[in-house]
Length: 92
Image (cartoon, rainbow, N blue to C red; front, side, top):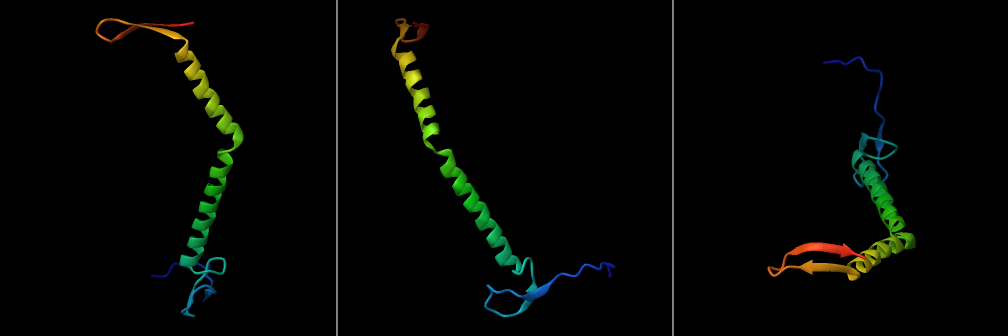
């Protein structure tokens, strides 16, 4: 079955392969090595983003949230009835 396409895929020897056979190439690499390179770029971006997200301002914000919750609970008056259930909370 002919598809009348004039686009021809480039073939050649992948510099990273050891078999020295002509293969279809994408940006000079065989499919396996090309997609492995793409995956590694993605992993590098994610790891850089992870380190950027964990900077000092984020840590300060998290500590501020925890400290404010602790202060609110410390100075709140909790009324507990005889069964141990909380029936009113007053925050001063």
